[in-house]
Image (tube, rainbow, N blue to C red; front, top):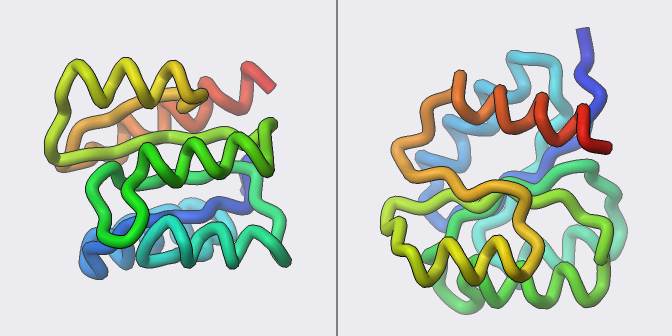
Length: 124
């Protein structure tokens, strides 16, 4: 059964993490696209709609906070989950202030991620 948030964009420079998360989400009924960094994601979003974006914090070229800032400027209604292996209070506060719905530390536990996705769906 497809979820309310059917189309998800996964943004992560670590290919293994991006592919693994995409496979799990696809198996759960989501239509998943992916991008290797924030610039690639913004280019993708110019011609594709998604309901939810899951993005890494630390990426080359454009990190997750820079991406989130640009994303909210161009697509203010975007729902974003920030993930990171380097959880720090400062980046957490900035991500939430910039409009991230949630901030999850890596390694991502799928059950925890699913709860956040469900919470976002109910908040919409």
